[in-house]
Length: 109
Image (cartoon, rainbow, N blue to C red; front, side, top):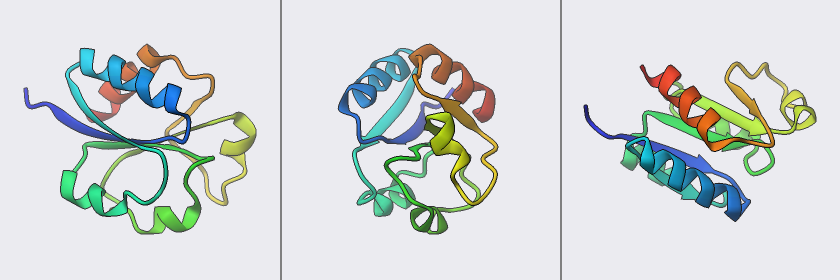
C-alpha cells in the first residue's frame, strides 16, 4: 500500500507534533502547517485528506481547496457549529491521536 499524504493545518504546535507521531506510526505522511499560507502546497502534495482546525482556517480559505479532497474539521463544538455550512466530517477537541488515525483510515479506505 502506498503511503498517503495528509495535510494538517492547526495553530497549536502541541497538537501538530502529537499528530505527526501518531500518523507516522500508522504509515501516513503528515505535513503540518500553523496557518493558511500553505494553500499552494495542497496542490503540490496531492493529499488524500485534509485536517483543518476551524480556529486556524476561515471559509474563504476553503473556497480555494479542491472539492475532491476529503476534509476533517477539528474544533470545539461551538466553533464547529459557527460555520455557515454543515460540517460532515468533524472531530471535537480535545483530540485523541488514535481517534484521528481511525477516522482518517475510515475516510480514505
